[in-house]
Image (cartoon, rainbow, N blue to C red):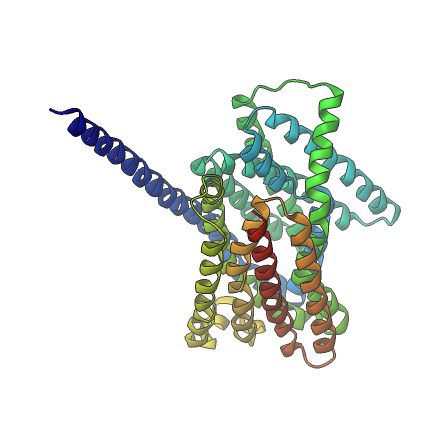
Amino acid sequence: MSIFKKRLLLKWQVNEILSSRDVTKQMKVIKDSAIYLFSELFSKVIPFLLLPYLSRKLGAEGFGELSYFQTYLALFLIIIGLSQEGAIARYFYFYGKRSLNLVVSTGYAFSLFMAGIILVFCAIFRSEIMAYLAISAIFQSFLNVQLSVRQCQKQAVAYSVIQFLLSAASTILTVVLLEVYETDLVEKRILAILFGNLIAFVIAYLLYSRKTRIKFFKLAQYKSALWYLCGFGFPLIFHNVSLFLRGQLDRIFIYHQFSEAELGLYAMGAQLAAILMIAIQAVNRATVPYFFEAFKQQKINIKHIHRWAWYSLLFVPIPSLVMWVIPEAVVVWLLGEQFVGTKYYIILFLVATTLAVPYIILVNYLFYYGKNKLISICSVLSTVIYAISLVALMFTKIEYVPYASIIGAFMILPVLYIMTARVGKTL
């Protein structure tokens, strides 16, 4: 065989090996996506099945009150967590797993410090339920970090097991407490969430500590890790607060403007529509590691991102149309007679939820390149528009309030499109 033919044969063999590796990677992406999606849906199916139980046990007013207190849980999580799961993911992809535990332990110390400040105020105002929410936020923040570590290391099965433990513990404790006690049922549901987070975190951390060499670092290293976390997290505070306002501010206003029963219908519609967000987030969690890896290898660019964002808009009306076809009687049978009218809110919130798909595609691009300030600017602008829409609609009828979420979710997209285009030109 001639040298030329040998070279051709060698080149063909190399191409075959590379092609087989690409196919293997693609299959792993699909497999991990399926595992994440199944685990997210399965872990959330139990709480979803719990909704008819909660709706009948708490009633529309009790469910509205629970929704109101959960807004504070989301707020405390922003303050205590400081987007540590995102900081962990970025650290892993840029610097590897070496000294990853330094960032994890420093983040935990920061969370405890911030939670201590909140608990002091809870003690001053003698609010037990707020203290429960703050403690729950601590363990939820800890758990989010553990889940982020599993995601970075592409441990889809371990991630799924932790999710299932969290869901199962919270659900079982909820049923036990609501059956044992007859008063303060909203508080008992919050306690069930707290202990569910605690149990899941303890198990997750024990498994993490077995595979990780726990050691003490120098004070200067802890200081560097803290600066890294703050440098990543503080610019995102405006972004996270904006998300909080768009997701929770309406319930605070409704709680004071309308009745608890009306808030119960509104919140139930939002929570049922959030099931779609579970699926969206599951796919996002599964694909982000490969998404970032493709950026690193320059296999995709801003043109691909913009094209995918445009295509995803075609998906927006489909879930709402499916819900529109389902009879109202099915929703009432599922939730109880007190929740007549919930279908209307589900349809509108599905539109706002589905608009998260192009949003996530564009934001992931900015996250990879560390453009957190741009993300915050976009979020603040969108939130201002949302808040203005919310205030204007709040003085009409509660049926019009969900349109504020749609306006806010849509208006951020052109801003993000422009921002990503500008970033793409500078690379």
